[in-house]
Structure formats: structure tokens, C-alpha cells
Image 1 (cartoon, rainbow, N blue to C red):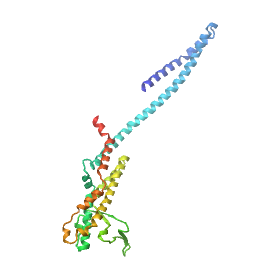
Image 2: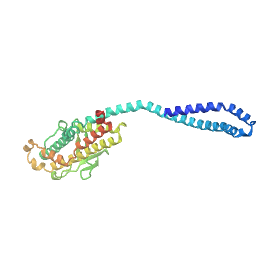
Image 3: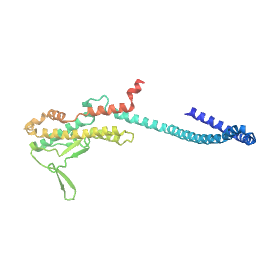
Image 4: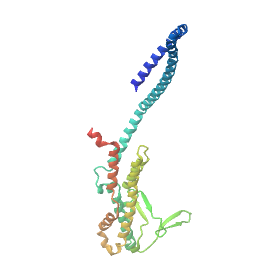
Length: 302
């Protein structure tokens, strides 16, 4: 491009030099009028030269200004890229930090590891224990100190309420405050009205929500992270189903107060494993996306 521009500038300079010589050519043309007829053709040709040079000059001027405009635009584009490059570099560096944190959630983790990190196994265990404690309190009048149990407000600071009218009734006390009260039903028809949320699950959801809030997260990756969060929510629903199925059998499992000394929740855990949606496939898709986005394999090959 620059070599072409240089050639045009040289042509432009040559035309300018030729144009400067026009007066001399013009005087020569004036003298030609006094020549004999045999020299008229030659004189006519000589008189056309200044006109041709003028046209060439105009064309060269047009080309010159076009080239100048093109060079100006290209220079601007290059300067813009040069100015924006540090910004892009800094954004990429920030993305690397975000991707590192996100990949730490998944790389080297098995399905069991992912379940533990999301607090799902803990949620299943503490809520089954709470149901068993409720059964012991209802049937055998055992005193249960909930703050000393694994589902205490310290270990499980949040609660998920089932607002189905068949499960939870909404009433107002004498002061006009709204109260949620679980609907009483036989244990064979038990419905879970409340589910305690352990700190591990709260922390996991908070971390993934923070990834989604980052403007550095590519839209496709944000979709995958949201899918992972949605899968966690669906598995929470499956925890509820497994607990309710287990609760339907507590009367047969614990017919006496003494039998409650031997609590086995393995059947509920097995049922949850049958119902739940695996986390590992979605985790692998997230990892693969990040690697493709960063072109890690190509960088290593280079």
C-alpha cells in the first residue's frame, strides 16, 4: 500500500514539473503560428500538449487526495487499534482470573465431589434427620433441641418453604402477623413443608451467582453456568421427593422409641441418586468451553 502511494506521489511530482514547463511550451506554440503550412501539423500537436498535461494534472490531483484520504483512514484505524490494545489486554487478564476461579469449581472433581461442594448431600442428610426428629417428637414425645442438631440455624441459616396450600397454611396471629403452619396429615401421606438449607449450598449458589453477575463472562458461558444453577435447583426438588418417600416409611421403620436408636437413611440417599440429575456432564461442558475460548490446546501446540 505504501509503495503504491509512493509511486503516485512520484507521478504527481513529475506532472507538476511538466505543468511548470507549460509557459515555455505555450510560447513555442505561439511562434509556431508564424511557421509555414508544412509545419502546421507539428504545431497543432505541440498546442495539444499543454491541454493533455493539464488533464493529467487534474487526474493526478484527484488520485493524490484519494490516496491521502485512504492513508488517513488507515492511520486512524491502526492508531485506534493501538490505543484499544492495552484495554483488550487488561480485559483478557481479568477474564483469565475469572476463568481460573470458575474452573477451580470443576477441574479434578468427581460427581460426588460436585455434590458435596454444592451441599446437596448435606441438605439431604440434615432434612431427613429433621423429619425423623419430628416423628420422634410426635409419636414418642421426645424433646428435641433443634439448635443442637445438624439443621440448627447456625448450620442451616436459610429455609425453603413449600407454599402449596395442601402442605402449608397461611394464618394471621392476634397481632396481624402472617404465620406459616404445616398442614397435619398421617405420616404415610407426609409432605415436606420446610427444607433447611446448609451453609455449603448457600455458599455454592452465592459463588455461581457472582460469576453470572460479572460483565467479563461470555454470554455462552453465562448460559452454561445458569444451566448448572438450574440443575442444582432441580436436584433440590429431588431431595424433597426422596425425603417424602422416606417419611412415608418411618412408622414401619421405627415402631418403638428404642428402635429410633438405629437410624439408617441409606434408602433415601439411594433414592435421591436414582432421581437426581448428574452435575458432571454440565461441569465438563463449562470446562471445555473455557478451553476452546482461550484456545489452550493451540497455544500449547505453538
